[in-house]
View 1 (spheres, rainbow, N blue to C red):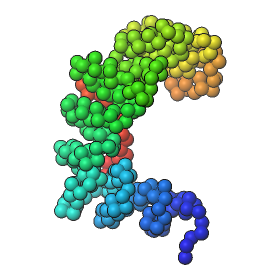
View 2: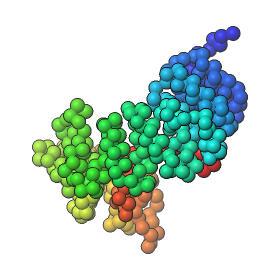
View 3: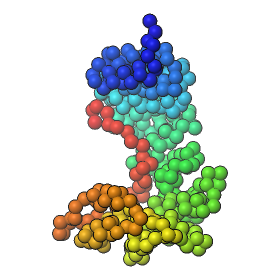
View 4: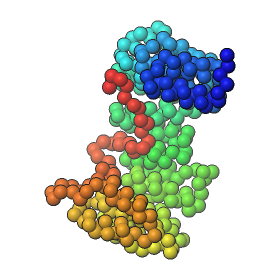
Length: 365
């Protein structure tokens, strides 16, 4: 008998059953939705079902579901998610690697290569994982997931050439990914290719042009740690429009990155106290950036007054910034907040945080 309820309601019930521990019922419902009710959320149903199977150690059923997904012609992104759900949730990845030998070949599909790569990685065998990720990337050259994994592992293993290649591929696939562009620009600059780094900081003209493109390039350069170059970009914008809010805020941050602390803090303070073009400009962000400076240690009362005096800014937002920074530090303790501008340490292969894909630990980690 056909269930007359809307598809969305039945899907919510299946998800609820899984969350509440009614695993068998939830899995049965998801199987039906996946096999009998194709729709826009079909891939999501398969991923949830895969995760439930993997948590129970049902490797054979998981491999069968992966094969079903391939036969159903799920997209490469959905297949990558399906493989990740299986690999990330199996309770014993090392044992799984042994069990699937002879049953799964990496050349069968990009998803199968990715499955083996994740399992080897969870089993602490990175040397085996990297060539498998490279194989997955070759088999699905338009899927950015695999380039992100290569970027992460090449950074961890200090493989500069591999990191640069993965970043170039990722920026080509995802031109609007600001974090990937930041990482590429930083890597090129640290390898002595600053001119190319400056070119790569700019998005292609089909995505952004004019002032917006300049502001975006300046932001990339600031985050990549190229303060003088970023300052030049923002000052060129200010020559045309002295009251451009984003350019003024960007210039202040560029000065800080370029080790011109006094000038940068003065520029931030001006944003808090003044209006730019008759409007408040980045007051909340300026207060936050000042509060995490070492030179402002012990000046929390003043910062709080500035937060309250922010002309035209949302008082609730300002209070939220101050609260997020925590109480005034005790004497002798650093006031630096974890959100402070992060200078690249000894590692030549530092990666901009937001670009790293988050992989939740498996049950054994």
